[in-house]
Image 1 (cartoon, rainbow, N blue to C red):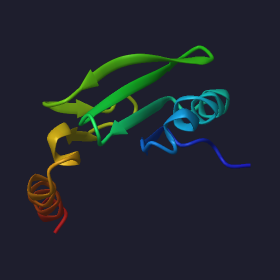
Image 2 (cartoon, rainbow, N blue to C red; image 1 turned 90 degrees about the horizontal axis):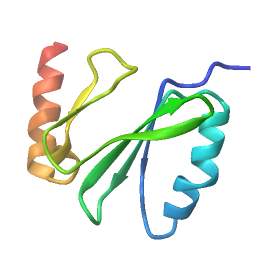
Image 3 (cartoon, rainbow, N blue to C red; image 1 turned 90 degrees about the vertical axis):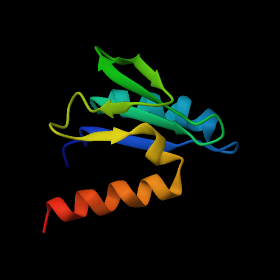
Image 4 (tube, rainbow, N blue to C red; image 1 turned 45 degrees about the vertical axis):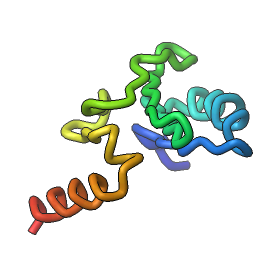
Amino acid sequence: TFPPPDLIVEVLSETTEARDRGIKMEDYAAHGVREYWLVDPDNEFIEQYLLEGERYALRVKQADGTLRSQVVPGFAVPVRAAFDRALNLEVMSREAGKNS
């Protein structure tokens, strides 16, 4: 068996939201995934959940600013980049440049 990932990010849609907030969230918690993000493209926000005991607790719900992982050191995402294609490309280019 493999260890669980530290962080899982799901993009909500009308057809997946109930499953992402229900059975998937419960399953990830049961398997010890320490951080879970839900990206809502319709309402343009990201929810960050942290595992507390056997359940997730909502840490933040952000529509702007930078969202920082609590379990993956150095991983941070400008929230608007998830919803704005031009900003996404800019951030991706900047990050790729750091690794060259």
